[in-house]
Amino acid sequence: MALGVVVISCSKTQEEKNKLFPIDFSAIKGQYTSGETLPLTVLNPEKQQIDSVVYYLSNKKVGSVKGNEKLTVPLNDVKLGYQDIKATAYYPDGYGESSGRIEIISGVKAKILSYEIVNTYPHDVTSYTQGLEFYRDTLIEGTGQYGQSVLRKDNYKTGEAYKKVALDGKYFGEGITIFNNKIYQLTWKENTGFIYNADNLSKIKDFSYAKAIQGWGLTHDDKYLYQSDGSEKIYKLDTETLQEVDYINVYAGDRKIKELNELEYANGKIYANVYQTNGIMVIDPATGAVEGILNMADLETKITKTPQTNVLNGIAYNPKTGTFFITGKLWNKMFEVRLKD
Image 1 (cartoon, helix red, strand yellow):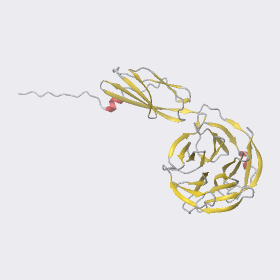
Image 2 (tube, rainbow, N blue to C red; image 1 turned 45 degrees about the vertical axis):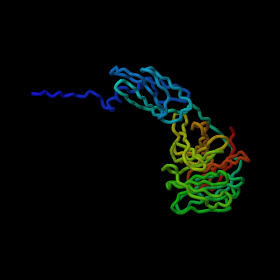
Image 3 (cartoon, rainbow, N blue to C red; image 1 turned 180 degrees about the horizontal axis):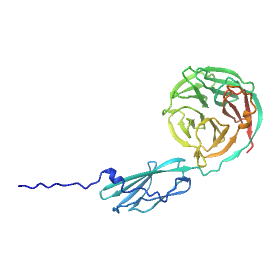
């Protein structure tokens, strides 16, 4: 009688291998600021022979070690926000992966800025202001609300419109900016934007967002557009393709600043209104760190309020005067202010 030999495999599944080498978080903090160092090593409770370990930070390789030596990673030029850590440990029977995450916060202490009111002008109280920007000596304004959204060229001294272009009623107008004599306008939930001739407001074309996000604020520097979506993110867009090039997460210290709304770029910084507040954040566009904070609450006390009066929203910088023009949704006044700092 022949005896059969039963062979039982002792090899581990990949899921089991991944549990062999967890990242050692005992020496890792939950939050770091740029410039600090991150100590990385893996645990080896089963005392396996480790050949090497490769480490990644948000899918970017940051180093490798022989055996299970400690790796110290400098956190320079790392994007603010959550960063995923991954370790791949290689051993004779294959490899094991483990992961976790840390949060990079801003080490910049934001300065409380002050301002003075230079002039007060009338503002069309029917304008639900969503975007505001100077084009030469003319103020371009984009307004919102379904069935009421318009793009308009304004005489800022009188509050009257030189010209208006109405959006189709299915669109809720949002932020605007002017780049290379073209006006770019966002819509809220329609994933659609429009490009106009800045001189006559004739529409050049429509465009779709690079990803399914809401449209809130829009501004530009001399090379890119910057778009907010109501989160703590500001997206950097290519001006021709309108595809996302990069993004920043906005932090004031250890606090994410969400609901970033109307945007304005001036003097190398992004000025962002925070929705439902009277605060304007001054942001480093390279890092997302809030460097200054403007409390504009006093302006709201100087307008004539009605049941329809809504929040502060509208920031336009006039490079000729070095002043900012600030208004709000359905406000009857616009304020020209100069920063004191």
